[in-house]
Image (cartoon, rainbow over all chains, first blue to last red; front, side):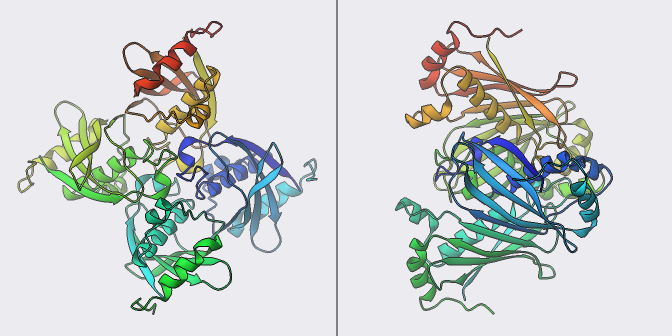
Length: 132
Length: 132
Length: 132
Length: 132
């Protein structure tokens, strides 16, 4: 399975008074990862929108395993977890590069079915890197 | 079960280019609702933090049923869904006042156990309004 | 001069690790105030957009005089500071209700000229409350 | 004068229904630039905070010259504009790499004086790259 990895550095306003990234930022990070994964698959999201194909999120889940602090760099790993049935499910992991600890996981996020075919063919295209 | 209702008006930057509230804002609305529910229960969250009791979110889930648009007013309904076991689970609904349509639901959000007792006693206190 | 006052309560993610509202939130508050002022003047912003009249901000200034903390309620006071010349300038004050202290001021924010006439006539309409 | 350049890609929720980056995001970008400039100068901001030196923004100004769209990459150029007197003033430019167009400028942002000496000595250190 193709995995896209993109690195972000924690911004000052993303951190709350507990000195950890507020839980509402993780869905934004997942979206950054999904955007890069789709670019990798040859179907940039901005291009889809130019053709009036929008992908509203219809379900979201996050499990928080560890704190992320200001100015820390984390990796967003994104992958297509399921293409069976009518739904697309993306999965995500927020990983601390230093010790490879998973700080948060994005539970499968469902999207409307209309983009399933596009992704299905793109994901199955030859030459995609395997996830170890 | 006690339900707290608080009304918010959609802010301009909460809406994305699809002209709907971006999915990362709903967890912020749930947190507003939870804050008001706790104030209602007589345990304001700011007071807990003053005593160094913090409540990091450890799991989050959202189901999106309908779009919310700029300048629309919505109601955030918050309630304690489960106090059994070691976890507290809050539930949420985002409701459009005009037709009572549920636009989004917050799936049970788990919190660390240390605040369970405080909430348990508060929720069980006499005089709390029943949820219909 | 007409002044609109709207009250907001500080949200948890608006506060940073210094335990004060991050400076990027004040422009969002000013926009909430401007939206309510325009609604008051009988020209709701959502209505303008429905007619494809958009009002991008072209200049912004903020002076921060005091800290605003989590869960605090503040008043956003908004007024039209200048309609002379080709530009509209809105002014704002963030005020703490308890002691009427001004916590932040929005320096005149310029907007494109195309909406000047609409606002000019609305602001000059009889029956608008005077600013003390 | 030392100029730090850092590149960011526009995130989906940063864009509003006009399909341009909402004006409240530019101060966050300026802060990213300032953070990298200070890291460059050998005084990482996270280190200052570890020593309980905080730098609340006390004045902010932005001029918006052009629209920035979803998924676009922009460069944040940050520099110390003034160290005379008691205040530090940082300056910023948001630049589109393709045509070097300045999309926004951060007007001098004032900070409390207590960090002036630290920055003054760091900025004057030998080996800093000149701004063309």
